Amino acid sequence: MATSTRRTFLKATAVGAGATLAGPALAQLGNGAEVPVGDIPNRPVGRPMPALTIDPPLPPSERLGWAICGVGNFAQNRMIPAIGRSSRAKLAGLISGNRDKALSVAERYGVTGDAIYDYAMEGLAEDERIAVVYVITPNGLHAENAVRAFEAGKHVMCEKPMANSPAECQRIIDAARAADRKLMIAYRAHFEPHNVAAKALIDGGALGEVWYATSSHHRPLDPSMPRDQWRMLKDLAGGGSLPDIGIYALNGIIDFFGETPSRLVANTFAPPGDPRFGEVEAIAQAQMIFPSGRRADISSGYIASENRFALIGSEATAELDPATSYEGNRLMVHRAEGSHTLAAGQSITQFPAEVDHFCQAITEDTPIKTPGEMGLRDVRLIEAIYRSAAERRWVDLNPDGTMAS
Image (cartoon, rainbow, N blue to C red; front, side):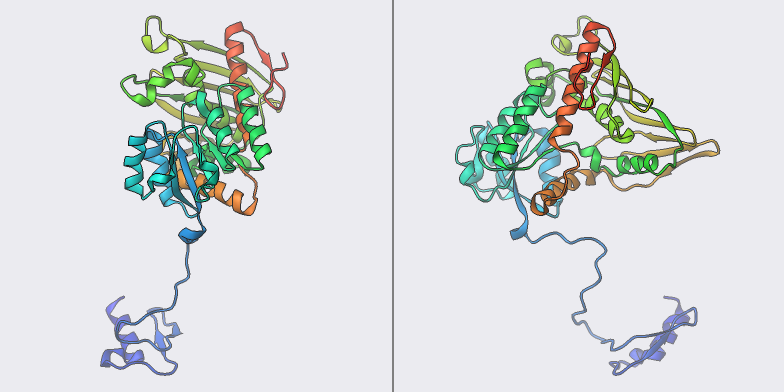
């Protein structure tokens, strides 16, 4: 407060003389305006509840208990901390094939030993502390883990890709319906602020007519890391870079355009002699045509590093670079007169946001943004990409992602 303004305020309130105000008083602000100040004590006392600018978290007793199935790198570095930052969830259990590892994690987060289960999940049905199971195991185990969680009467959030085949995806969906429980696929980019802002630009017409988009998702595959070792095995991974990180490009373009491709042609590649790619592809590329006439090119790779979307409109281009990282994503808008960065928020909020979204869908029966049917569609499209690459031809598609030819 400026000196003259402070003196005016003290004079008007008599606080400078050590008095406690009684009755109405007026304080004159620097701009000449007078405001009533009421009774202002000159000693520390309890003040009224402030008007909150954010929604406060639910009390712990009202939060849904989550069990993490698969306590690996992503679970420990991202999702368990995200549950702690969420407003509607709490960590209530762990499901792991390594009990010693699970006990170590449980000790850090206050999970009791009787809330640790192996992958058989025996006894989980009777554990009322756990309402949701989040499946974060290798892709080839998703169906088995998710079905067992549903059979135990729990809701399930499943990592992407939903499974290794459309049949496995359908098995998960059928189990959810049989159990009358909810299913969500963890497409976190739908909750990432920069991706949300980019979609708003398209939907609001700020980019003009967007007829073409491209996306590339690449990262080096590192066999020295346990998290990458199983990704070299087709039975566990379902494929190479495409189902791992190419799915961000595929799912993202579909979300931005609001439609599923009607045709695609694709190819895959692995460098000769590279032991990492004896069973899976290193690089996948696909060109997609949509019912509206829009076009898109996507690529994924396990050799270089790139993480990008470009949404090319008649008035402007929106560029996400990086696009779907855990932190530090950026949205640029390029126009003829120049470019600027659009402030959208912190990327790390995507993790608690998807957790809270699923909790709200469970407790309030609200729609799920990324349901099982979306996961099934994308796995069908991945299957079509592999078919096109193997047969070196265009593949026609139905709106649900199934192959028409």
